[in-house]
Amino acid sequence: VTIYLNDSVINCVGYLDTGNKIVDPYFKRSIIFINKKCIKDITNFNILVPYKTIGNKGIVKCIVPKNIEIDGISFKALVGLTEETVKIDGVDCILPNIMKEKLC
Image (cartoon, rainbow, N blue to C red; front, side, top):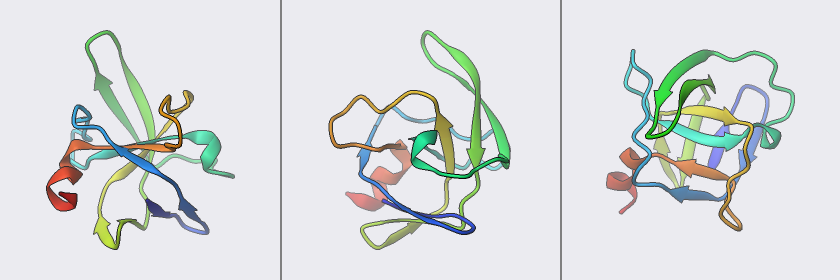
């Protein structure tokens, strides 16, 4: 996964989570979750997105990237920053379910 931000490019390994159906309520953009430690020098967030899961609810801080590429395919999505690390060995970010149709 390559995420293009304003002044930087982040390369990471993603995991396609078919249960990740969280979208922003206004424009219905999917959200890629990444640990905020992977993104350096981000001080402002473009959008706050409410979420609700089986046992939790809250607001995730998101960035609107210039572009996201996965295996040469461009995607429009938000990048949600989490405090928690991804608990799958070798994985840096969690991809949303909507990308399944384009990748498979």
